[in-house]
Image (cartoon, helix red, strand yellow):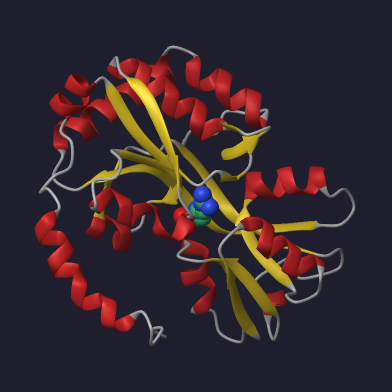
Length: 255
Ligand code: ARG
């Protein structure tokens, strides 16, 4: 359903597009500026989050390592997840690394790097709650705004209701406060959350496997290729394995 107050603003999209540059900063421009402008959410541990006011996490360390490979300095912006890809189109930053699943829909709007990890959405509930898709019949499920999980769950038959929240924390609170029966969360977020809230959460099955990639603005092949090359180097030289082991205790690259 479209929000009635948002609707009139849709007419502005062609106007904004006319004012934004056609392809965003090219690789040559990134190198000349000496800076790679990266964006993430900052609320998604252990991938990207604030620890004592410092942005950190697997994706932040990986993004920094990619900038280093390109020979430039990383500069980070944090934006709510639902708006991250829009900022690419407005040329606010060059690269988004925020656990976006690579989907045909998103590929209409942005380009994706080769996957920087593989994972899947799991069902998280209070102990004794839903573990499988079959258990979701008649249950209220919560997901993040604009996530792949939301799209997936919305089309499942027999769901009791869907609630969206902007952050993982809001979704977790809804489950803990019984405003929702379950949530879908990346498997590694779920492991992290269950460590922070021992005994309070049950982690169910992976219901939605996905390949996760970094997004760049469309029609920017040089930048995309150099990001892919940088990722391949880090995956080959041990940097990726080290980071992955540090955050997850395993190598999370796609098989
Ligand atoms: N992987 C899911 C998706 O692609 C969830 C990503 C949520 N990421 C975040 N930074 N909050 O939609």
